[in-house]
Length: 320
Ligand SMILES: NC(=O)c1ccc[n+]([C@@H]2O[C@H](COP(=O)([O-])OP(=O)(O)OC[C@H]3O[C@@H](n4cnc5c(N)ncnc54)[C@H](OP(=O)(O)O)[C@@H]3O)[C@@H](O)[C@H]2O)c1
Image 1 (tube, rainbow, N blue to C red):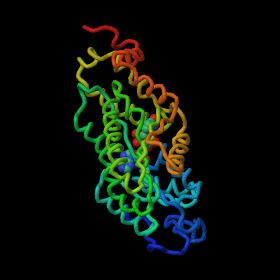
Image 2 (image 1 turned 60 degrees about the horizontal axis):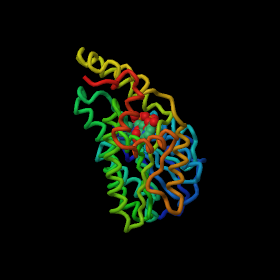
Image 3 (image 1 turned 60 degrees about the vertical axis):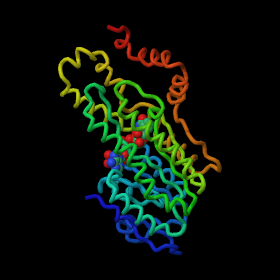
Image 4 (image 1 turned 90 degrees about the horizontal axis):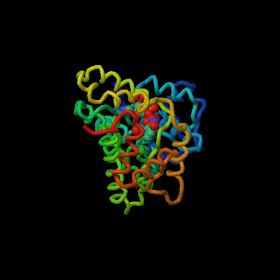
């Protein structure tokens, strides 16, 4: 079972250079020494995509990076990249005990210096037609994308307070724009936005900034995973679902098209800026599609709806 105690316990205020336990074990305790007391950041969901790009970037920029993954194999892959200052923590963000253990382990390492950054990045995409959605699936996506970031944040607030650290929530343009077939995912990101606003105001007195990053389509595997998931669910839809929603369902491959959009590195650059700039913005959009979507959402709803439906040419053209 994944275990957060894999993080290296280093005494608080340890004047020695910090070493990654994984590096030490695999490289004969000789290499990968990192400067003592650099700024530290914890990034969830670093096995692939945006989280992985953020971990690599922050490590290159000299941060001490706690990169969380769920599988041993992913931890090894990440360590193989040789990013300086990076160590892995096994963590399922929906497991409260693991989150508490991770906070304890990181706390032992950063000591009185505290944690300078928390990037709540781990997430999943769940889609499908709302009429046929198993509500357990809605709970699952809310659990991972909305409740878990709050659980993780709560656990790390004491460490962030010590460093006047910053929190980055990996939201999405789906956090302000909900469209057919992906609205369960959108619901989770809308709710994340609400928590982000609440945290930003509640943590303001301590100088802890809370920032939302809202990427458009990013070239990662998340949409491939979502498409396979929806296509599997489609097998269990009743036949009349296809009669009613045929043209919309036919758009699944395009709506959930994988491997498109800008590179994850662009989001990593934005996260780095959000963590380091003197006065961070409350929200950062990433990608032209996110900008365009923002603009569309400011139109009157009836016009906005027509634009969204017009992108599904064989659907929503006439009402019965
Ligand atoms: N790609 C886009 O177009 C896009 C756009 C806007 C926002 N985002 C957001 O960006 C974030 C990262 O997504 P991505 O595109 O980089 O997708 P990704 O490559 O699929 O990465 C998702 C990461 O989250 C991890 N994760 C999922 N459930 C978890 C759990 N219960 N506990 C711990 N880790 C968990 C995954 O770990 P495993 O490998 O173990 O599954 C993986 O490391 C998500 O929050 C997503 O909503 C993505």
